[in-house]
Image 1 (cartoon, rainbow, N blue to C red):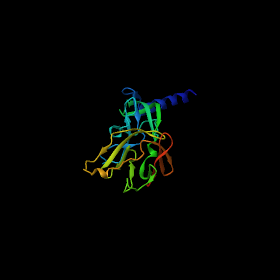
Image 2: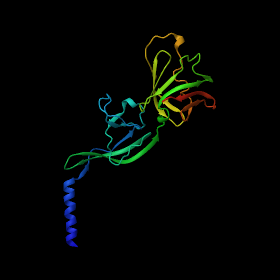
Image 3: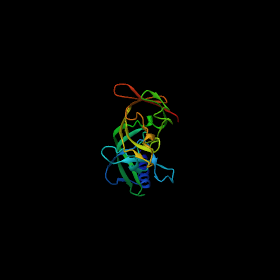
Image 4: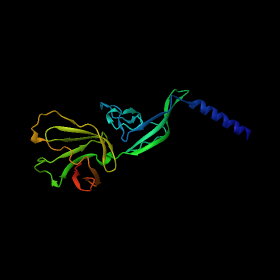
Length: 225
């Protein structure tokens, strides 16, 4: 019995010696994890993906300023379509000097409903009139870019991009500032680029139906891809 115990002790010591011990490295870190993986290289020259994180107390919904870190956080499983506020600790292996980041705990979780809007949409009806019509002679399309929180449309002459910040289950809660190209256009060319987008919406299959607070229909969009 003593020989077996002694042998186990030797195996344990050898294992620890080979693997090395870890010690905390740096302070505890707290940050939000973005709901989509993002390219590690913003220039697009490499194909690897990273976690997008924000270290602010409340999540910063500006996709373009997210900090990028490697996907590998030991004990953490990335959850698509959720913003997660997590606490992590880095550890350093005493022998190899390798740094490992480990999850301490998940502090908060918030569903991101941007996925309900993703894709290219054709506006079928606005204020009770089918499109195309006199107000929209060429019809109207809106494209929500995958994961980038940006909508693209046109006023009939200029291309207009609109950052989408926070999306609830039935309403876009906050927007960024719209940006337009600088073409000189006759006033008669201007149309409403995002008809109905500020209203309450309901996703029904390939239809996105916008209505006002009284329940009246404002616009109907159909997904085309």
